[in-house]
Length: 239
Image 1 (cartoon, rainbow, N blue to C red):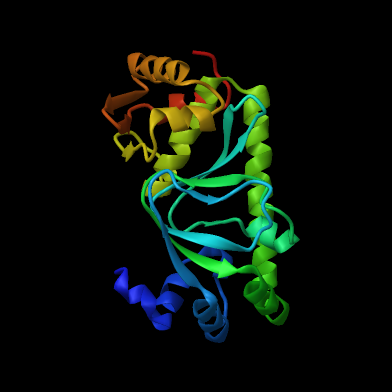
Image 2 (cartoon, rainbow, N blue to C red):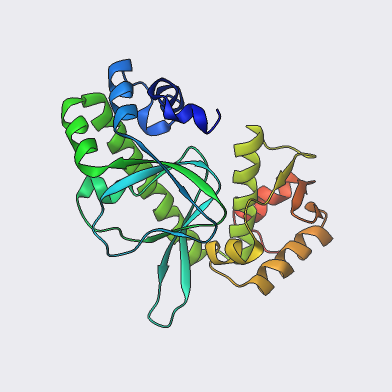
């Protein structure tokens, strides 16, 4: 879908049908959502919203990648979530009518659709299906954060990285098997922060995976050679 076509509410409606949050909605609901949405673009490394600021709305990422981060008092950054195209972000704060719990920053030039809080909440009260979808989305986000906390607390970097590679392979190919390749969508620095480690440790772990024959690497492209061993590592097998 071209950038120009998104100026048309009908084309916006077609796009919204592909978004998990809006799945199964009636055409009238999709049309109403298309009418309130606003196209917003952000340059690479631009803040989209700030932690602690009142949530004025939420976003669908159309292209690019976005990181949701929290920063410690000493300035260290923790990546809570990496947002992929066709995913929503900022919706939890809108649903709770609270401040944004994280800061959102574009990792590259990004295109988004923005939904103002007031207009969206009015639609939410009139659409039971949208309300159910919103609850399902919140449950999905809670599951993601709970699993991430478990990984950071209980699993080594090798297990976290293995699971990340398996998930990315499944996202791209809808299956996991030997010979399938995937491109890392973000830099090693950002991936290390997401996995709760540092770039040097991530590089050593990738090199270890390569030496064991688990993966092959060519710049940012990774080919999975031994998916069974990768799955064992993700479950906690020592290497």
